[in-house]
Image (cartoon, rainbow, N blue to C red):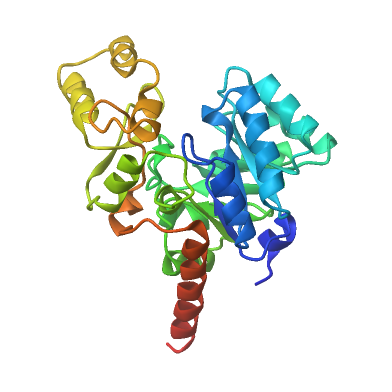
Length: 313
């Protein structure tokens, strides 16, 4: 399958694995890349020396293209960018910040730059900044999200109508049928996060993976908009946040309640009560844990089957 995304990244299938904190290490990234997609190392939960280790191990595990995701809110972002340059990473996804800050710097080094947005306004800003492609992420997505609560079904055609560079859809995509739907709406490819959380190679805790495969519709909610909007599984910590809102908590009180290391505690260490469990609404459609390569095979098989069915309408 060849289109603008497969050509841009030099991959077989237009499936990009999300660069998720505490989940997207070198094992997952290399497995996805080896299976024809684009694996992405999520640097947001890594110290600089840890990122270097993951990049080097990923290079040894795959000869295929892979990327690094860099949240621009990261406190030592300069150090991460230096490592990315030193280790000759070819593709960088930036998120959670102004794309103008790093796009020119990275492109001058010959790096392909993709920026993640949650609205048309930011998609246009990213295009103006000179990025090579855009990930437009709908409200359904897990983890940190947009404040406007625009769904993928609405966001993708809205962005497609106004931009000229390749478009990657994200948010609520875990199946081949959803992939086809996103591409019918105008996407050139899809970014898949939650489905790869429940993969054998994902670095998150097995207890968190089990929460994902046992999730039902309505088990997640977008909250903490005053800090940084995040979609969470409803657990003890979530209920404490809900109670704080009901009692009129201030932003500072919410910050205190959140504290530090909640995401690591929940997703990486497996504290299902007091940890922050970030996952998308599509978790309700994920029922098993399997190798990343099998996930990609299933998605592409379902994509082709659905495409043939639609052509018969």
